[in-house]
Image 1: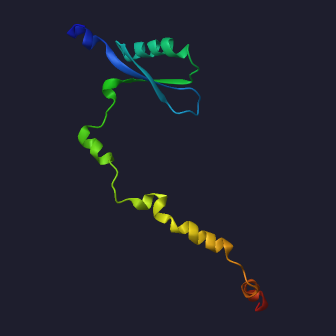
Image 2 (image 1 turned 90 degrees about the horizontal axis):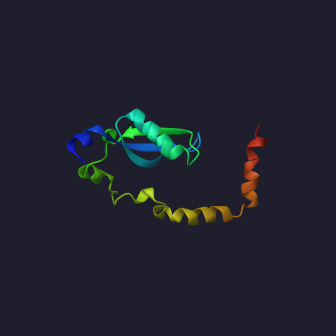
Image 3 (image 1 turned 45 degrees about the vertical axis):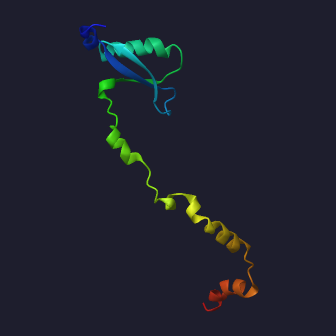
Amino acid sequence: MEPSDKTFYQEYEVFSKRTPNAAFQHQFSLLAPNADMALIMAQENFMRREPVVDIWIVKRSDIRGMSPDEKLILQRLDNKDYRTTKGYGYLRKKWRQYEQKMLDENEIMSWGGDQKNE
């Protein structure tokens, strides 16, 4: 490929969704001279194979990814045990004790005790 060819064709990413309520999914990449031609090529290559309700064509240079330094902030901190259920294991036992507790006669009678005073 000559340097002039590299500037003529641009890389595009094709996204599509199969139903109106579905999320867009990346399908493939293609080379095209402009966005209109990329849409036509995507329709010709993709829409006759699968049912599609919408297509997005995005120039690859317009997609911003994270740098290696930015990816470091995605690492999970180790001091976040409260976000997982293993930190609350005692609650299952406590709830079971509460469900199995027998109601005695005095407790049941105390529920209606407020009505006698009215």
